[in-house]
Length: 421
Ligand code: ASP
Ligand code: MG
Image 1 (cartoon, helix red, strand yellow):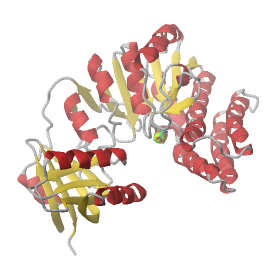
Image 2 (cartoon, rainbow, N blue to C red):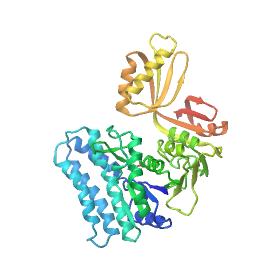
Image 3 (cartoon, rainbow, N blue to C red):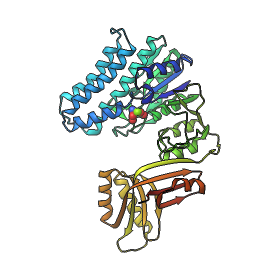
Image 4 (cartoon, protein in one colour):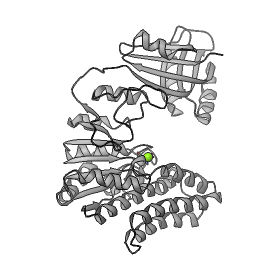
């Protein structure tokens, strides 16, 4: 069996849903599980709605109306017969949000977030499944919350693997024998049957979980790019597609911030040796990138950009050397503030880290660090990571930049820099 994953961009309008259906029709009509995200930018919008609701802002109702209208516009284009049950089905799903909005927000914000934001995936998969059935492609809608079992760490839930595997293996093979199974990415269910989510952009990870538990032959992520590129076209004019990538390089690239695949995706499929294909839903005939266990060296250097970095330099107040004890204290403070280190460098009297500038978090971090250390920081920086670098590639990215920090290992070079004044 195979697993496909379609992200929000692929189902952002009625045309997208039709295109998805056309791709799917080119494959066997059983033993295919399709994981789908919320339509277009609906997760952002549902997030906005959640925060407005939590703060008790009137805007929540307006946003809710916009979200409903967006989906019903797509539905009315796809289903000309207004008696199609999808109209009621989607309306009933939205009632969950309606009920919440009628009351004041009293539960924890993270819990409420998961109950509200997950509706995006529930609705998108209902629409796609109904459309496939309408055009004669037998599709079974499956509720991912019954299969992906998690703890109740809302907004960043951890998968409980043994339970998940058990539920998936117990029920899904029978469905897969009968038709195409459509399910949601990003969402799971707790042992008390509340909805949880796996973290933003987590649908790739969901697909990998299904793959691993079903021992799938392959997984395919359908994207709006032709495959894994050596740089994000947002930052680079000339990008190249990487035809073959090892699991190891894929993990490295996503770890350093390549957004093409969610970082948690690779491990579960690597453990089972399942190949992952990244292909374009805009050019479904083209071969994309194959990510496998074969250790093919990357044919070209890869560039990963992160903007809005803060470089924080930490000195002991008494100018003593940076010793292990200081370092362990620094990492405890970073961990407590949930700040992820993008790169770091240790010298005799200072320790420097580059981190994402999440205003609130960084303010607290600097306050905490300043209790023990002298802290200097520099905002508005860029971090570029080059995998398989050489001097030429370094020279290329530092044109018109001042370099504040450079860290090199055998295959990877990281540079923190800012525009020349
Ligand atoms: N819809 C969710 C998000 O936008 C999950 C995903 O797309 O992977 O974050
Ligand atoms: Mg999305």
